[in-house]
Length: 234
Ligand SMILES: *Cc1c(COP(=O)(O)O)cnc(C)c1O
Image 1 (cartoon, rainbow, N blue to C red):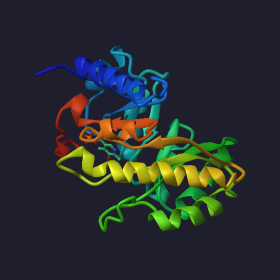
Image 2: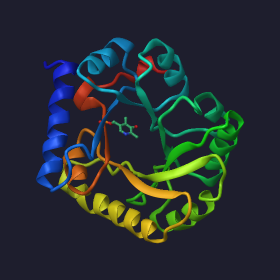
Image 3: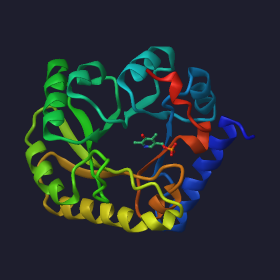
Image 4: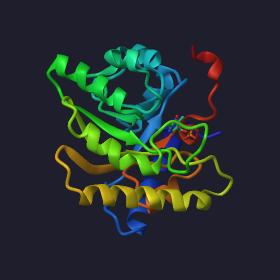
């Protein structure tokens, strides 16, 4: 079995090559190591390989890990976030990917203003209209962008999606393509306080396809750290 160190380096070089292959700058897409359920030691192994971007899903796990790990890590909140937990993470994350309601954006804005900061957020899109998923439906995104753009304390930096679980990553190409198109359409509106710089899409099973379609953040867990054991999480 290969180590976390090797896995991280291999996927990072994969991502760079895929960027070049699709005519993009190799630095355009950042590999986020998704470390939910994984211990500090595993995170440090990826850190030693050069990783500075880590993704976490659970507020309590994230706040427990932050003080135990190097300060130059950029923490990405990628999991569903409850409004009442926002106060624990605002000011401690680099980017909140999983903003799935106007109410949540308002709370992030409110807590950010208390700290005198502006938080960068992505709007989560349920691009395949899946019943079980969080996120704005594709036809709700424009209105959400327009409402959230006037919320003080937050800045919309782009869009995020988790594509359906698939056998063949090619099945998700259409969804990644639609995400990119959605971000282009929003950018064209030139709304104040809305920047479509980031597109967070692609996971262990489909990051190659996502990079080809314009992803700027791939979120890879299993392919770096191995399978997860959820019994370890509260
Ligand atoms: C867990 C998770 C990932 C990583 O998934 P893998 O398939 O293990 O790479 C990416 N994004 C989100 C939102 C997740 O919850």
